[in-house]
Length: 222
Ligand SMILES: Nc1ncnc2c1ncn2[C@@H]1O[C@H](COP(=O)(O)OP(=O)(O)OP(=O)(O)O)[C@@H](O)[C@H]1O
Ligand SMILES: O=C(O)c1ccc[n+]([C@@H]2O[C@H](COP(=O)([O-])O)[C@@H](O)[C@H]2O)c1
Image: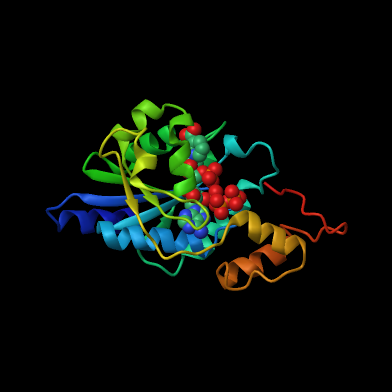
């Protein structure tokens, strides 16, 4: 959506604009991400979900991460067909480690005060939020939506350490897909068709992103 279209859409409505924010390393983006964003958009009545690929994901510094431009382009390709999905460069254009507190402040600055922000995150990331930089500020900047993820058991008890009402848990259709598994499958010459959108299979092949490991041992089991 262009900024003019956004302005027209906003002018014609009384309710505040509801913007979902789906942050991720997206190395590569897969259907688990897309289903999570789509479900939260439907359940929370979001006007738009902006996907924000990380610049430098500091909590993944133990492994190689593909170039930000490749992850950005994959995110654009995967979201292009959905008129409510968009992609932001705020994290990849900001130098240094990526912190969500900066992401949310940048989006607030860009989109204005009359927007409610909903940060979408998987159950694994919800558990980690208090380790994030500026965690005490995060819940004033956005409402957090933690989506269920296969292999990550999560109940309301797991949210006890977070401020009350700061996070909503949402059950989404279970897709046992991870970027790690997609990378490993590519490296072992196994198909990733239907785990990721078709254009992503083709982009990975074209750019040789996760080359087959001749030793048969995945490079980044994490
Ligand atoms: N299958 C899934 N179901 C629900 N949420 C998911 C799923 N995969 C990823 N997420 C969530 O999407 C966000 C971005 O995830 P990320 O880009 O790190 O993908 P990932 O599959 O977890 O990657 P990796 O395996 O490399 O750690 C995180 O909040 C993560 O919890
Ligand atoms: O702010 C932080 O310190 C922080 C630490 C780890 C992860 N995050 C954010 O959480 C989202 C998912 O991250 P990841 O590493 O699981 O792809 C992404 O938007 C990250 O920027 C944020």
